[in-house]
Image 1: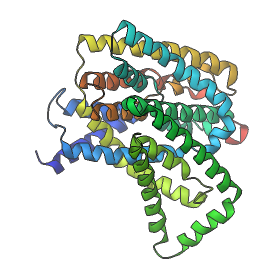
Image 2: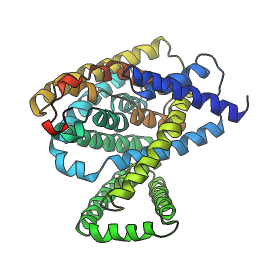
Image 3: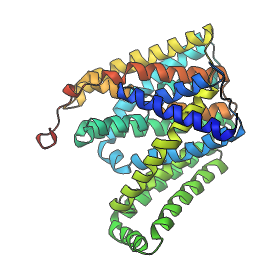
Image 4: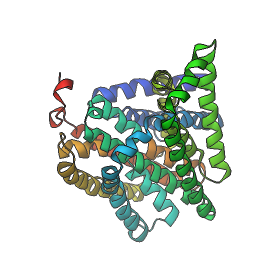
Length: 388
């Protein structure tokens, strides 16, 4: 089968199945993963992974994570970081700690594989959750900002932890590099906020010139590639570099109008090509789990769902206004891109086996089937101005 026809079949099927899943209240990425799983060696063996697909997957991953970073604004962190840290603890740190202990000491999974597999299954996904927040208009209320801040913090922790464990010999350099970069990021952000009018003015004047938009968009993408390359040079995955590069792009840097154009353009490209291709290729890599893998999946998914879901329900009822605990747990339980990205990077780098990669994929699928359908519109009280 030719490459172009394989690509056509994979993309066409992923878009249709992903859309069908969204219609029934499930994340599209679940359908896209299943598409790759069914078309790949695990089931029908129609399409097989190759070097071209792997390269395409890496390119897609860069643009997906860049957009995730764009949506993860520093403003959200500043306003809601206190409660955000609390929910990062309940939704991720606590269940992850238990998963690590159980997987390493009771399931006898080696330490590195245990960490990477547990993170992949336990981490909420900002790309999925931000879509849920928008769909249910939750960004208009404080609870939505807290949830978004929590997921941003959680995803930064998970990317950093996964990066450190995939290069244990350089962990000191990696942690130092991340701390320096985060400090630099917030200092630059603070400086830009003080002079936002002048900075935006520069970009607006450039935008007004012929081919100015092309130069701006090209500069943004090149900046993302430069930062990603710097992260790779110091031994940290380029994924974290793309994430931070996206954070730097904000309405106080390029202006609200330009950021809106860039975000809409990249969102369309991601939704129509990069996301379905990346996740369907991830599905191609998966295999049907054996009995041992099935046991691992059920135990880790059970811990993540039961402990994280219960804590999110209880703390959501106590600390989040205008949203009930069941819906809070349903939102935080959404899994998708971040976990699969971490599992994919770990697998392609040789740090986890195909067996554990498949366990991460199936764990993501199961949690995505369980939690998002728990979200109810009637559980959310919006301000009078936004009610329909």
